[in-house]
Image (cartoon, rainbow, N blue to C red):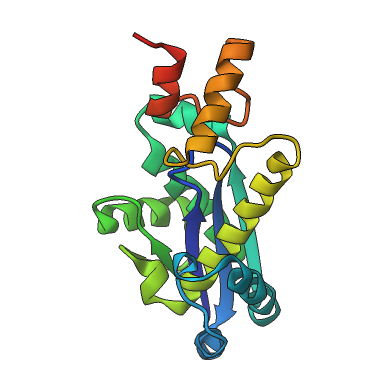
Length: 206
C-alpha cells in the first residue's frame, strides 16, 4: 500500500515560486519518518530541515517537486483561482507518484471540496484533504520539508544576485528591494508576484 503526502511552500511569499512537493512511501515505512523526527517544516530550524530532507529522500520510495512561477500565480490570482491552481499542481504531483492513497494539506476553507477537486484531476487512488495535515500526518510533514527546502534553494539562487530578504511581505528588506526596483525600472522583477496587494499598491500609488 503506497501512501502519498503533499504540501506546499511559499504560498504567502511576494516573490519566487510556489512549490508543491509530494512523497510516496510504503505504509509500513511511515513510522520511520516519525522516528527520525519528521514534523511540520514550520516547527523546525533551517539546519534541522536540511538534515531531515536528506533522510526523507533516503527513506521514501519516490518524491516529486513542482514549481509554479510568479507569472502563472499572477494569472490565477487575476481569475481568483489560486486554490484551483494549487489543486491542479497537487493533482499533477499525485498523478506522477501513482499512490493508493494521498493525504494533502488543504488551502481551501472547505477541505472536502478541495479533496474532491484534486481527486477529479489526479484520478489516482483515494484523496484525504485536511486542514493542518502537515502537523497531523508524518507523510505530509515529510512533504512539507521537501517543499520548504526546494523553495529555499530557489530563493537562495536569487539571493546570490539580489539582496532581497526572505521574500515575504512582512520583511521590510524584501519590500524595500521591490520598491527600489520599481523606482529604478518602472516595473517589477519577473520573479515578483505582481498580483499581490502590497506590490499593486507600489505599482499604482494613490
